[in-house]
Image (cartoon, rainbow, N blue to C red; front, side, top):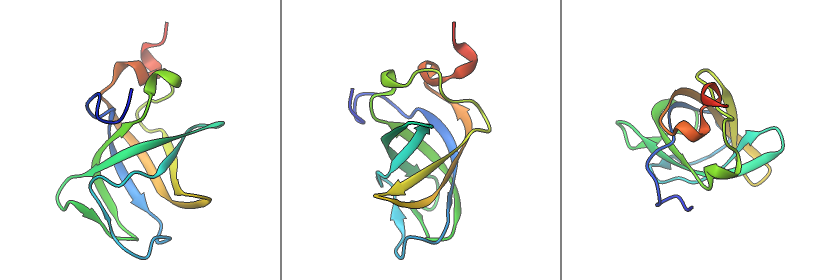
Length: 108
């Protein structure tokens, strides 16, 4: 399942650490360390403004690629890093999980 095949997976706070030298715009797709041993691509959508400065905190949503590959790995308050290649660009704090498949609290 690609990024366009489902809606956002979570509402989040994006915290950029200043590593990027230019703003990130809605649609930005860095890699996310969704689990200790699993990086996945995720599409950022920012809520007013539609861009994130290199050292900012901004609300938005994230849509992960292939969430069925890492079910039940998120919970509110979880912090995950996001990166461009080997460079960590910031963190994502999960506020609300929109995709039940990813919600650790709904695990059987």
